[in-house]
Image 1 (cartoon, rainbow, N blue to C red):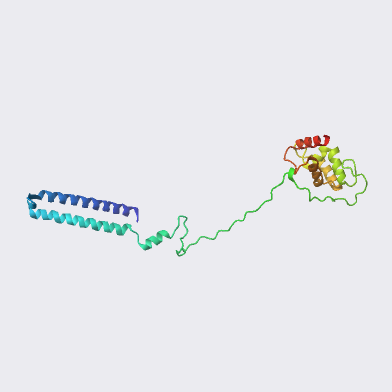
Image 2: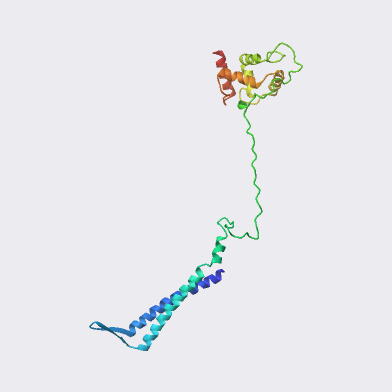
Length: 239
């Protein structure tokens, strides 16, 4: 219903209700003024000053009461929704989707495509990298010589060379293992080149890591500063 018609409707209903109340009060007052009761013993007798006017007030009160009843019925018809209106109001849920059992609307929203999140593998820090899968035999073809020392040798690096490298050159071994300098900064280009040459000869971070954990009785390399790891390993070697 438009707003202007709704205002007119409310004004009409309120005006009719006020008119009914005023009419009933006016009729009752007139009847009280034109009639009075007289008690004679156990009997009551009513006397009228003007019987015709009294009847007019009586009829007016009956009309007002009848009009009030009719007004209440009209309000009930208007305010109580019909079955079609109830279905129309219930056809939409609070989220705007049709309720169960209602026919589909002419305009339907296009189906939404489910977006599948992509899983990205976490990037491991140098302290937690797994070196067990490194190719320990990379570059072994064509290498000869019996000198297996990591720093001063030129031959193939053996498992015993890993252990001696850790004990004799602890700071260099920790730098190679952690891929960082002792102050937690990035390795210099010269150091990375030397490490690459050692890897070609067979130096493996996986083996070196096992020697460190065996020496320190660790389950894993702790996530602490490189210099702190070096100090703990040196204390263990010198003890």
